[in-house]
View 1: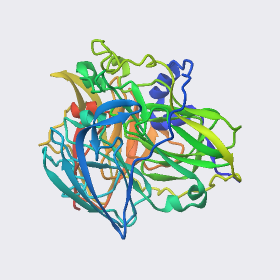
View 2: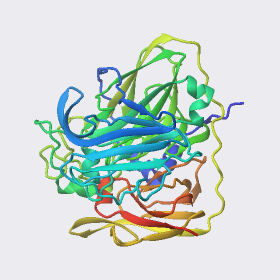
View 3: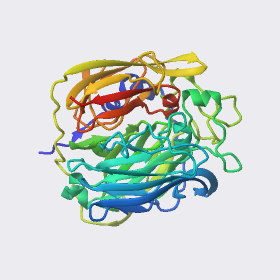
Length: 494
């Protein structure tokens, strides 16, 4: 008896964007999808894996001219590449990363989704690494760390959106139990880093303008691994494992693959218990999923499509930057801003014996009842321009907003009383979404980003484990974070 669950789109959106998000989606113009000739074969960033329990690597952030598709683009890069190098490690490994800042502004690194110390040389987002300086990060990945698709990006407050939009992002993969499930192991693996860009005629990123800085900058150039509509191949009968990251500053992706369902096997924090069949999926900024695709259709080409959708801008409208419009145009000059666009193209090539889907994956831990419940209200107000608030306060690096005790479990209610969606992200400790507007979620999953639609309340259950110290929680529409929607979390020893 199969345990694969089929989900209707509205049920899945209830997990990702909530009821209001589903309404917004249903009102979105579907339009005729673009015809687009597939580009070159999907490129993968250079991979640097741990050896003998050690991942040692030099990483440099610098401005560099790179190819974005067939265009010369002046972007911010890690090691001269967009996206940056893919780092891979295993549970128990030590990571030593020597990071050099060759930008003209301060920066640092956030190891998004990794459960590692928030202090010292770990995932310390309070560090400032000035231009020209080198800093050595060193930490150990816990022996019980789950396998998953994680990533690294800048997190120097006030410049996060600008630096990520400029190109600074790379994958950090932890290999483990999920990779060893026979059906998953047999699948062909591809990573897709989804990201929007904007370029002027000189190949520079245009000034975002006031409206885009308030509502979240959106670029008109959609890329997968820095390419426009790259091609992937699969044999008929084969199985494709797609590992997807939304590395955009503000853009949501609403994805579907022509004539093929997705079989969800993992979310931000790792594997779920059994595959869930989806017709399409939504990725908020910062979110990751892993899906399997069966090569069981007629040979041909099938497009991975993205439908236009930007709930982060909500009722504010504008936020799409450039294009000669006063704060209201999308960055760049694409005529397809309101059309469905092709992100990548899947082509059948050859045949193989049919590979089965897994029936079971990995157990998702049931969390105990919470020892405390807190509420966090997201909204925005007007100060020097628009500011974004949590519980009526904008971020202050001198203020502790929330204190919790190590080795406890809490329920947090995230309430969005504003007009824009806010993807909620907590550093260091992952969580489970328990309910949306009082309705329980249909299956258990570990998350570190959960989008909250206007008017929606979600309840998350979060265990604080292993590491004491200060870290942060915030909206992952990064212009919202930079404009105040972040709080400091102090995890205290019991």
